[in-house]
Length: 235
Image (cartoon, rainbow, N blue to C red; front, side, top):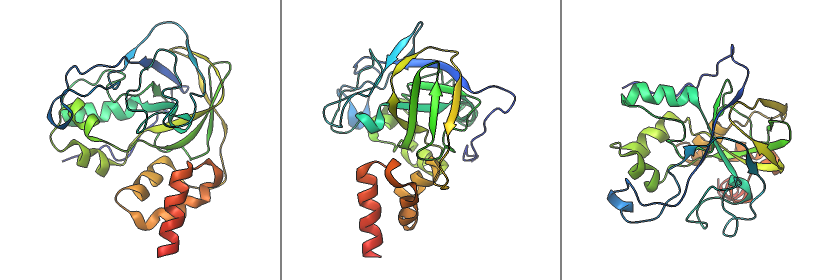
C-alpha cells in the first residue's frame, strides 16, 4: 500500500487559500460508533469573506470562523484549535490512494491550502492570510472515531496515523476576514525544528520523541507541554 507520508507543496504556485470551509451541526452520513451523534465535520466551501477571530478557551469557544459549528466543545475548538488547515496537495495524494473524490473540506478543514506544506510547518510559525488575519501554528489534528465514521474508510484511524500528514491547527494572533484566493505568507519561522508532523508522531506512534517537542516553547498548547514534561520526568 502506498502512503501519502511525504507531503508536497507546489513551489510553482504562490501559497494561497484554495477554499474557506464552514459547517453546520449534522448527523448526516454518520454510522458505526458515532451513529446519531451531532458533528460539524461536514465543511463546505463558502463564497465571500469570512470573519476569523479567537473563539475563547477550550470548552467555551468553538471555531474561529464565523458561521462554523463545533458540537463537542470539550474535545474540539478553542483558541489553540481556532482554525484547521489541510493542504490540497495532500488531499490529492489521499484521493489517489483511496480512489475516490475528496472535495475541499472533506477532512473537516476550515482552510484548504495550496502551495504550502501544512504538515511540515513549524509549531509557532506564523502566517498572514489575506490582508489582516495572522495565525500561529499550534498542533496536529489527532484522528478520532468521528473522523473515521465520517470518511467511512476501513482502518482509517490507523492509516491516517501511519501517514503522519495530519494538517495543522492554528490560533488567531490578529483577527481578519478571509476568502478563497487570499495569499498565505509565512511572516515568522521559529528557530527550532519541531514540525507539525514531528509533534504528531511524538503524540501518537513515537512517544519517546515527546521531550524533544519542548523546543517549541510557549507555542505548544499547554496540555501538550504538560504531557511532554511528564514524560521527560518519568523517563
